Length: 222
Ligand code: ADP
Ligand code: AMP
Ligand code: ZN
Image (cartoon, rainbow, N blue to C red):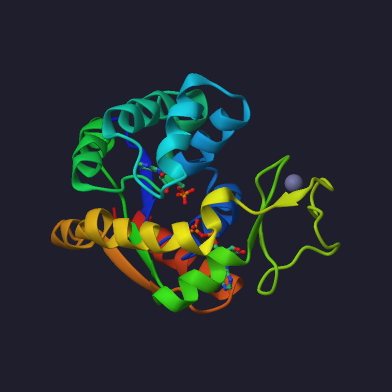
C-alpha cells in the first residue's frame, strides 16, 4: 500500500486550526488544505465556485457537500499532496467525513484528528479580532497575535482585512452550525480511536508543541 499521512484539525471557528496548520505544514512537509481558504481564493478571483460559496459563507452556512467534496478530491489529487495533507475546515459534517474516509482508504486512512478546544466566549474574541493578509492569507489577531506594523502583513507588507463573516452577527450562526453539523464528528472520530484533545487556550507556541508531539507519536505508532 502507498501510505500517506492525513491529519484532520477539528475545533470551533477561531480555535486556531489555520494558525496551527500553517506552522505545521513546513515542519511536517505536508500541505495545509483549508476549504475556507480555497473558497476565499476563488471568490477573490471571481470564479463561479467563489461566487456560489459566497452566498453561503456570508450567512455562516455550509457550502453544499457535493461542491465541497469534489473540490477536496481535486485538491488531494495535486502533486504536493502525494505524501498526505493537513486538513483544516474539512470535514464539517458526517457526509463529508464519510467521503474523506473513502478518499483516503487506499492510503491507510486518517492518521490522527486533533481537537483544539476553546470556549465560545474565547472563539468570539478570537474571531472578531482576527485579521487576514489580502496577499498571502497569513492570519493575525489585533490583540493576541498582532503584526509588527499595524494593518500590514509581516511577511509581505500586504493589507490586513477583516473577513466579512468575522462580524459578530455571522459568528453566532457559525458557532450554531458547528455544534449542529460538525460536533458529531467528535464522537465519530473518538469511536475510530483517532481523536486527540488539546487545550487550545494556551499560547500559539505551546499548542504547536503539543500538536507536534501528538502527531509524531501517532506516526511512530504505525
Ligand atoms: P480557525 O482556523 O480555527 O478558525 P485561526 O487560526 O484563524 O482559527 O485563529 C483565530 C484567531 O485567533 C486568529 O486571529 C489568530 O491569530 C488567533 N489565535 C490563534 N491561536 C491562538 C492562540 N493559541 N492564542 C490566542 N490567539 C490565537
Ligand atoms: P473557515 O475559513 O473554515 O472559517 O470557513 C469559512 C466558511 O467557508 C464557512 O463558514 C463555510 O461557509 C465555508 N466552508 C469552509 N469549509 C467548508 C466545508 N468543509 N463545508 C462546507 N462549507 C465550508
Ligand atoms: Zn501577507
